[in-house]
Length: 141
Image: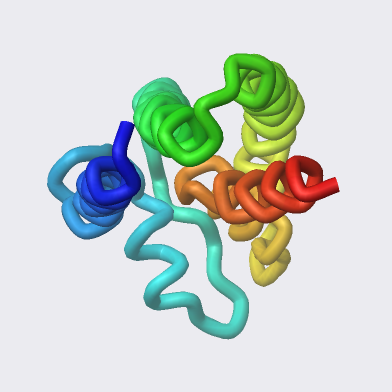
């Protein structure tokens, strides 16, 4: 794959990630989006359909993960890196989704920052921003 084609493919995939973020209100059920945008001094979590929330968070995580894995493949062209990334993403979802569930159910008024950050890690491709430099520096070594 030529360098120009790699750059174009990564840019298309990055635009897909931005599209997921840009149209999150229309694509996903997430009452926490507006809750965290309008946080007050001692807020109480809004009423929400927990099953729909977890399905939509999981769907968004899956979409971001697939695109992120494609980006990693294009950048590194290495099956071992993609395999390790799949394992890391699986560990991430296995650990963070139950933590998210507990935090949504046990979060008290005004104590939502942990919930905010765990949710943010699940719905944004932050892990990709960690993996690219990590694999790059490992490859340089």
